[in-house]
Length: 209
Ligand SMILES: N[C@@H](CCC(=O)N[C@@H](CS)C(=O)NCC(=O)O)C(=O)O
Image (cartoon, rainbow, N blue to C red; front, top):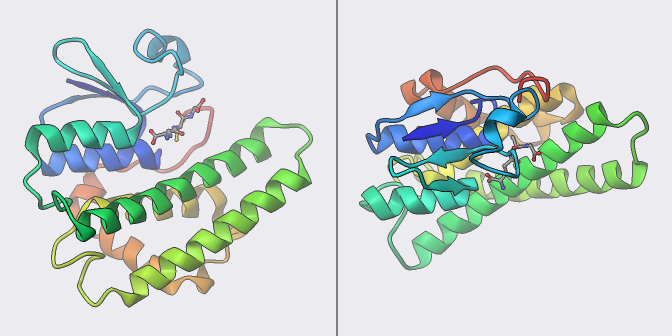
C-alpha cells in the first residue's frame, strides 16, 4: 500500500496518523502536488493528495473516503463510534476542521499563486475562517473529557490537530490565535503525542506541497 502526499498537508497527515494508529504498513511517497504532479497523475488525475494506492492497484482519493476505507478494514470503534449521535458529532467536527483546512489552503493559494489577489475572495475566506474557529474553539472548550469525544484520541481530534498545525504554519500571524486558546491547547496536546511527532513535516508551500 502506498500513501502519496507530504505531511505538511493536514489531509495527508490525518490519514497517515490514523493508518499508523491502526497498524497499517504502508510506503510513503512524499510527492509534491505541484513539483511531482506528473508522478501523481497516473494514480489521481486531479493531481491531489492524499492518494492511497492499495495492494491490488486500486486507488482511494479524498481523505474522508480514505478514512472510510480504513474504518471498513480495521474500524473497532476507538477512533470513531460505529453509529449513533457520537458518530454524527465526530463527523461534524471532522467536517468543520477539514472545511477550515480547505479555506486555509484556498487562502494560501490565493496569496502566493495570483499576481493580483481578489479582495472579495480573501474577505470571504477570512470571514469563514474566523467563524469556523469560533465554533471549533467553543466545541473544544466545552468538552469535559481529555479529548473531544471522550478519554481517547479519535479521528475528530486528529483532524482538528492537523488542521490547526497547518494553519499556524501556513498563515502565521495572519490568524490571531489568541482569540482561540482552546484550539492552541488542543494543538499542543496533539503535537506532544509521538504519532504526531513522527508524522510531521514543516509547512513549505506549493513548491513542495
Ligand atoms: N478534500 C480533499 C482536499 C485535499 C487537498 O486539498 N489537498 C491539497 C494539498 S494540502 C492538494 O492536493 N492541492 C493541490 C490541488 O488541489 O490542486 C481531501 O480531504 O483529501
